[in-house]
Image 1 (cartoon, rainbow, N blue to C red):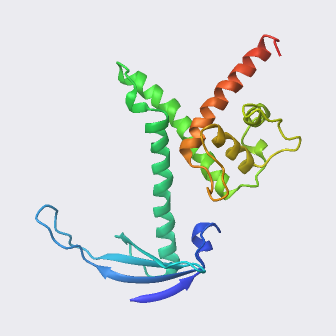
Image 2 (cartoon, rainbow, N blue to C red; image 1 turned 90 degrees about the vertical axis):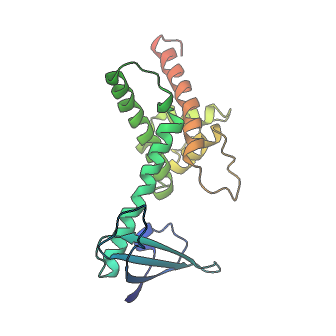
Image 3 (tube, one colour; image 1 turned 45 degrees about the vertical axis):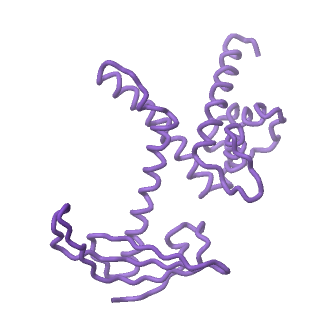
Length: 217
């Protein structure tokens, strides 16, 4: 059994409130059960204990069939596991936001085409949610067209800012169109309010572009 420590920013990119990480790696054998196959190989049980200032300790375990000999290897496995939540977010948008399970298409080819389009939509929303948290000060122009970010203010009946807003400002404004309250203790918006707000934003932007195309604006 080994024990070591490392700052959690090495795992979380600076967004984790915890200040230290304690690792115990020990062999683990699954308990046999008549309804599941016998496990023949040992698995490493990684125990993570994080302590933030003034916070209660949090402990969780990640079981893996990979050999963990060093703290760096354990940190790599944790980063792999963290990718699972990005995938969960993607399929959450795909199923509940895009409602792909409600599609009533008579041919597999049509279903494949629809999924290809909706996967791009789901990826964009999941990507925006993530970017707004890890790169909040990124200029909005890196992700949005000018018409898009200005529309976020116009739909709220507010004048668009004269200076280029940050990505975080635009994402929060879009999420407010979808029901995000943006109160002091609310944290950052989730993907659900973002997709609801983005639906309104997209319809508005398409309307503006159509009006410009016929020289009505």
